[in-house]
Image 1 (cartoon, rainbow, N blue to C red):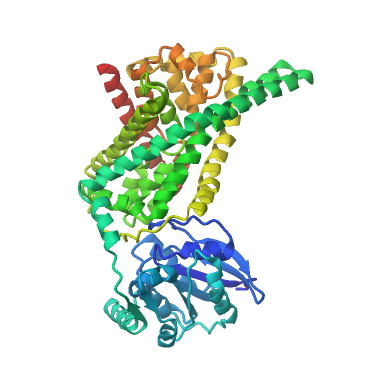
Image 2 (cartoon, rainbow, N blue to C red; image 1 turned 90 degrees about the vertical axis):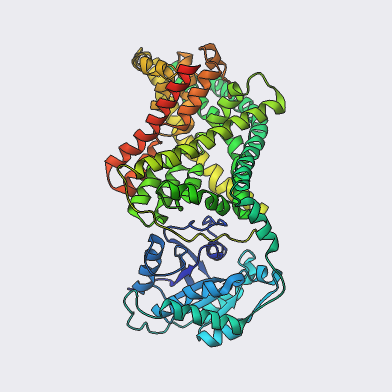
Length: 601
């Protein structure tokens, strides 16, 4: 097969900086995180030097090529395919012996290997000296050192690639043959004994922190307190920015309306464009952008620091006790960003039964589209009459308790499923706790704004504008259709402590959770026109109380996933019955909880 570029397979254990190497070479923003299980599929990017043009294939991070997991299968199958010119295996200089075992496995499949010993800067800080020359002589392949966070340290890797001449691929052995695990371990240990010299530095600080952050009691306490702190900072900052941004955007909307009138545009066109599309768009941007611009960088800083693997470790035993795989803790954490991404991330779970458990329960934790709604309801109603920092504190406590409820419901429903329709044995997995690292604040800010905040906002904007137009048309042209639909839902809604308009807003908001609240405000307006940005006055005018807001917040937390997540579930499971079950489970939980709240308040 002809290839237009020199193809390089990039392999390595999780958390050795492999995606950082990929990003530094290609300039792409493949997401890097200080926890395992990030890459499930291959990413591809190009870069060039004076000698060659390269196609770099970033394989999933894996500890072995035994093909016991999806990551291992993807990596092994690509390496067996021979559809590449060289394989670069990235190793961790701070724990080289473990990383070398994968390198030895790759060498069993192909002689065309370059070893990149990454994190050399961290090794020096820990007083670990790695003799690159000795490793190269022992293995008979090019070996280079690097600290991939500093792009200039990859010059040696580029030079090694430019000088590399692929050897003819031998007849590849079938999977499972080659050096036994014990021989491979002994060879890696013997090589490290000759090439690695460790100093007197110890990891006492990391161990001391882990005793607190992963402790049976303290681990959970710190987790909840950190979540509350992040939410408090988010709410405190977002309220101020939302008001200012909303004022600017809605004044601009007034200018647009005046401009269309000056041009002689018909009233229906002005209403559709400004009162329908633009005002919903402005509301979503002003309400969603500020909390996301604060929450995502804070969440990413914790990830970059190395805290999220400790969260997964703390949640491992609860998931095991529910008959699920501990990896579900990782996919649940992904769901806080986006439930669709969390569902896709379930591929890291080997067992089909346990993968289904994770897929079906991922929507029980709030995604980025539901967080702004929860924050708005908590600030407007659940904080009571408090003002200033007290209101932000009470609102953050309320949202924290809702998130904890979501985690608890995830565990409860997982256990229910594992004891009924998805019975089976629980598997185990290896979770590496990476060292604590100083976050790269600048890179974190850029990554969280570009890769998360603007991406999510762009998706919300793409849905909000058409949704605003549809709601305006339904409210102003079709006559009584929306009131009729709301009346049809009224009996069920009343039993849940809500009203028909609220349930209708949730139904119409299935394309994206971000648009549920603006749709509800448009429905309350009668004419399909939103109030000023961030204003929840129409809710109070329609008789909303703290109890109503609590029911709405609970149903925001527990209802059918958005259309993107549902389609992702269909793609991942291949069966519509699992899609229907994934929608029915959180909806049933939300309805029951709302009925209980309505009955006791």
